[in-house]
Image (cartoon, rainbow, N blue to C red; front, side, top):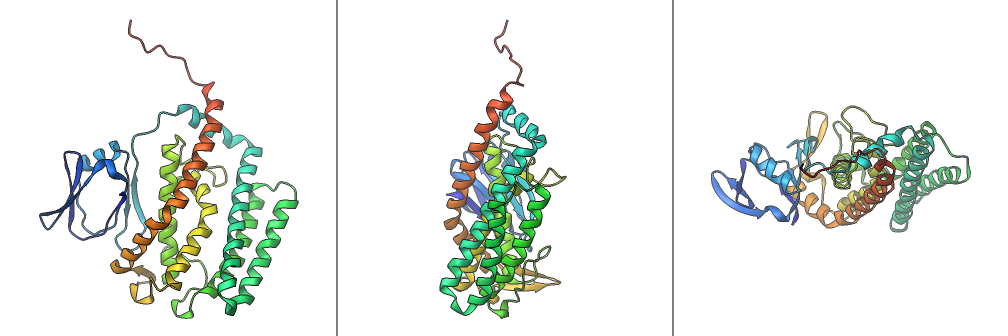
Length: 327
């Protein structure tokens, strides 16, 4: 199974032996073996569970993501047992002061992100000749930025952020031409998202970030310590680093939901200033997300494993030799 999505009202979770039992209105509806679970996403209202459920899920290696029932915003994240990788985390922290490493790491992320933005817009242009002008303008601006990145001197991180910001403005200006005006998508907005497209982008980015945190944790890395997104209170900065090159993949996937009319305006409602994806829409969203997710999850596993291997030997010198044998 891998991922268990719980998006029903008045649901109770209990542990029954080696399984997670689901009860609705006091009646047992199903059970799932713990060994099959890698991640549990809880978005339903009034979902009840106790500490034993969270403990057993964590012991089984399943990560738990709790989302706001209405806004698809992350409320809490529970990971499994901490990885016994002190050497990796020591070296990861030490790399924060290595300006050359941080610059190379950041440049590679920004380059990969913009390159994927270009490829997405080029692909979209082939199927949407009516939006050719806007897409061509966006591709040209992004390509110019890539050329400066490839042929110029190694930019400092503040310069990279400026380049990424300029690319994002051109990219979203082109992206809005792909969606019908009735959806009200004029560019990126959030907290809360104000139109159906941004509601889906926000949820997709939240799920990407969840997978990035989990991949970093499993590899023995500290999700809080990033090199492009510097450490900050309340932010898993390494996970924020890792998802940057994946955002264009999520953008293209969201476009596909609307292009194929998997989601329509009828799946959304307005609440105050925010746009909410309804339960029927979430069902379509999550079903297709799990079909597409293996690609980015594999990339995250490989990227985190490679980084951990690089750091492990560097940090090993700081570990104290201990004699674990009893006298």
